[in-house]
Image (cartoon, rainbow, N blue to C red; front, side):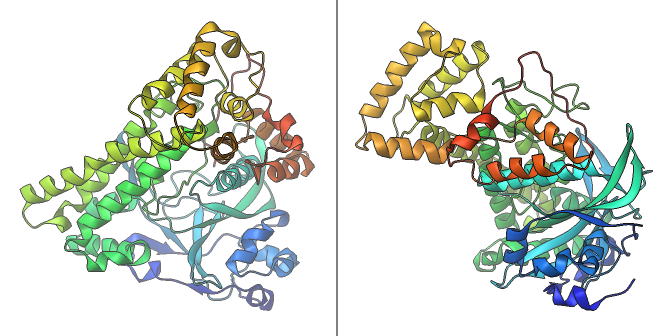
Length: 489
């Protein structure tokens, strides 16, 4: 595989600190070339922030890099090894169809992984072809960019390229490669892999690398590995609270999908909730509801316990003391999550200060939403605009009583009505990637029409704008429409 002039002109500035870890953590290999790469979409703003030249990336040689047919300047491609608990069961995993090209150093000095997804089989492929289909790759592009617009930490999507191949999933589908960008792909599963099959020194090397990359301030702490645990817990508590506040359901919260950077990754069977209900599940494989909306905080805490277990040999030489320290840190998750969630819910209702009965007021509204089958996003949108519609919730006597309690609560703070309105606008998106809208965009794209997707992406780029053009994208699906997602990414 060659490195070409256009790849150099594109602005690639790659480093490879991950490749300095012990060899057990990766396998070096090139992406598998595709026959006829064609650029479907390029994220121009992301490219610019990465220091990349969009014009060069759109040229034939630039697209060849995004397809995996050519290597960018300085690339050392590799597939990462990791393990994970999938639906509670531990298994060996790894990048089965993804290749890390390297870490792009941006003009501002930030470091981001550049990964090709759908780039062919690797030593960690488990019977698959290592390829990806166009629909799931575009779906990840749409949802990850929507999450970015919502202000939620996430890996992002730089480009999608069709390959000229057909892949077989449930049906024959056009093949594609997605270029993903992330602060890193370090996961709880990476530590589980090291703890199970590596030495203590391998584990220490991984932990030291993680600290240097994401938590350099740990150098000034008495116990860097305990600090690592605490900081990952903080980031996950914040992240999952933000998911809950916008009705996002990840769908596959396995430990291999939990990043130490605190970013959302793996947009397989994810979806956004329409009708509010804590038991909401979309994933076709989550038949027991393990990863239901209401379970996400509990599962996050379970996953973090698995991370804490891997760090015990590093936290203290005395196992009993290590367990005690780790349990102390892990016990902080519940209160950290609750604090983040409660602060976010207060903001969604325009509440600036704190009163002891705020949580009761919030829970009353959620209970009413569940009882009347109210749309999660549109309920808060209507409250933000102070224009309750004709939905059954708003017509009910219970809601009218709640509304009076809420208005009285707002009256017990100093902020003006305009300040309340502005806080609610910043906290309640006018639009989310509605599942039926996403599917419409994907169906059109698979027929060669990408205009539907581009319009959707434009609307989702600023979900708090409350513009007239967003109105048509805020309509829920028909009540009798059941949406199911599949783990296709």
